[in-house]
Length: 187
Image (cartoon, rainbow, N blue to C red; front, side, top):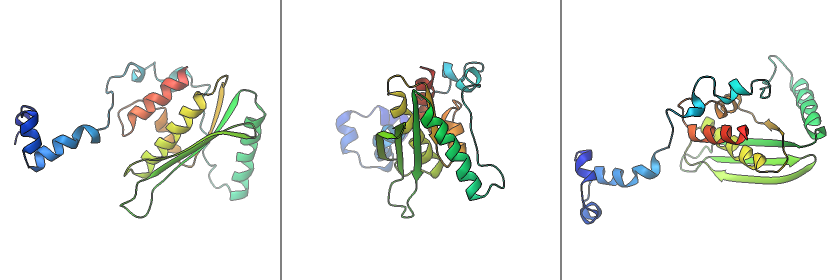
């Protein structure tokens, strides 16, 4: 069956027709990921990393740093974050189960100072690790930006490419999450 024929089947015919093409067409809208190939926010000069380059920074693990050195570095950043007024601290992680029949998970927690104020754990469907990590960042940023009077957000995660993708509005898997993160960060 051609796509045109499937689109022009009446509702009754669509419901009684048994074929792989009709089954896929019925599920396609739920399976497709929305993206915006020509978003105004993705235009050169208008991307969040170009507009706010001095306000967004990434701190990857230093090359050759021991676990103790890395812990000391992150403790210093965490101490700075806890000491700043109007700051939120977001910890997020995505997890892929070894059993391929299970869904990936995305989890995030938000603290203000020493007090945890929000947390979530969400199913990420049957996603790959970078997509689950991006989902976790999206969830954490959504919770942090919803808190009144927050002007600094410190995000801790273990997958730097997903963090960079969260502020990249080019076409990629999970682009709609990146669009939402950047929209929230702009405000």
